[in-house]
Image 1 (cartoon, helix red, strand yellow):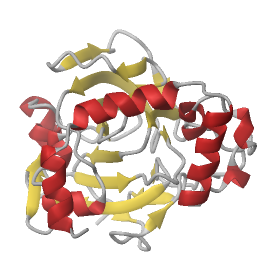
Image 2 (cartoon, one colour):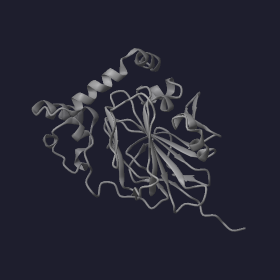
Image 3 (tube, rainbow, N blue to C red):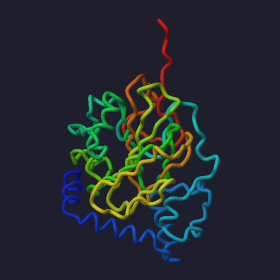
Length: 291
């Protein structure tokens, strides 16, 4: 199927109904049937169960528990860098934010405000900053970890569409990541320089992504009430260290990161379409040289 046909099909499919059905199926404890589905999935997508804390497919009562399986403690060592990769997956795009516009694919951009649920005041913090869009395929580890230490300030659940987020759809659906349902997590890094403290990690939903969850809230969606939901945490001290788990997808999707303006050196081995692993260097902050 070519890209145009695949994208056109998504416009007519009942994506929410399919997503709800997938969520119900993934949460079922079906005994031998669940185990058979898990074994098929492992074979179909080449999942590396040797990395899992429990590599036995029969140990997972539901597909969700298999899909969000933890890894062995030493499976993903953390690099020494200001920013580390928060997920396993593939690089969709990364680079500088052009004013307030984020590059999605050839011919497609979207604004930081649109991504952040229309919050122009929050978006201004990332004017001329940096972004990274990271795609999680079905075979990948689907827990999300902290790319940098941070104190949680805010979380928004932004309702939206449920298009697929694979590369073909990114090429064919304008503003994809600002149109799909998403969970926006806003962090403050007290150790950073003034003006460089806020950063954002966005969990983007997709077709058959039954739900998204965070470690401090639990499952965020469902419910899907239809309007933006906004939680404020400034009066709490929810602090996570670099590398800590912060959330997970119940069936895979995409993470979009927004970083503040300022000097940033991306991992020189990174390129769109390239594979990445949790804990590897994402970016470093060059040392300032005194004149």
